[in-house]
Length: 393
Image (cartoon, rainbow, N blue to C red; front, side, top):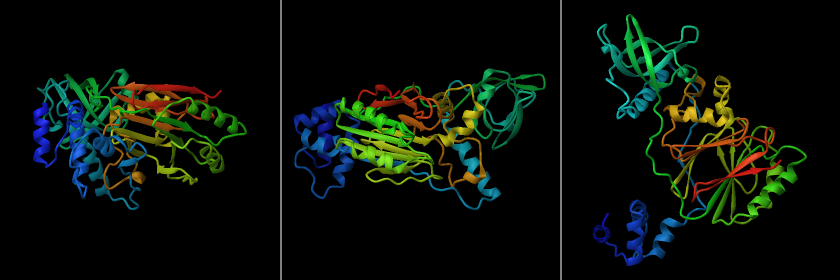
């Protein structure tokens, strides 16, 4: 937006803006909507929009974490209609993610395939997977068809996921020549905060007789940082020792906040900490979206893809845009809440095995590991999006 347009826009809203405020919104036009939403909730609007007012309304608030997506408990009673509705909803949501993909050549529905159809693409759900024959039976809302797939992507495919398939007819065989996942957008602006806010990600903080010495090392690393706010995310499991966490929390500096992510099957309760059940989709500073999961959710996929590192397992699921694509009736929700939507800026798992980190299209993927594996953890600066590796060995 031009500066004149910004001035006129604020005047239309009954607000005057001074040069410092104008310069800020000229450099950060994406913040205008957020600022106006906050002023609309105020009983008394500011007489002049300047940088001080802007900071007060939208640049502060790093001490708050908000839930942006809730994951309700599964349904207790499940009918065939519930299952059909849930899978149809998943198919339709993911199908829409493929609508603008130029790499899907001649997309058609299964019912439109004829003996004369030579090259085409499908968006379909995997119903069955035959390891011996390297075939997958796929279906859409119009029918089903068996396809042959003899490439390296076969091992990454799981039942009940929605794929894009580019196909060719070879006599009576439909051969898949390319597999596409819904994936995340290639061109994404990397979300950042404007001040040094750090996140530390730790697993299994309870552990053994060495807890105190390891906690001392963590505190030493924290004291070397200069920050506006530090969030410490602890991924607990059934063996978590609450007293150890409490001793650790009591020693933290004032600007540190502890968030415990726990498995629903093993709830944890400790003083002076915030609690979120896994999975949790949170936002920091209104800009950074974090998807945080206990590794138990991904254990089946770690077994399926046993040659992959934990962060690579998470990357596969991110590309599929689903946390748990293999359908399980006992985990059925009224809606398919385990779809990865919106796209997270940071995707973290605890207790999944060895620690690791990778960046993919603007998303930072972190496996925390645990003290039972290699004592290696990560600190992430939300302003620079740079990571710091911490060894506690």
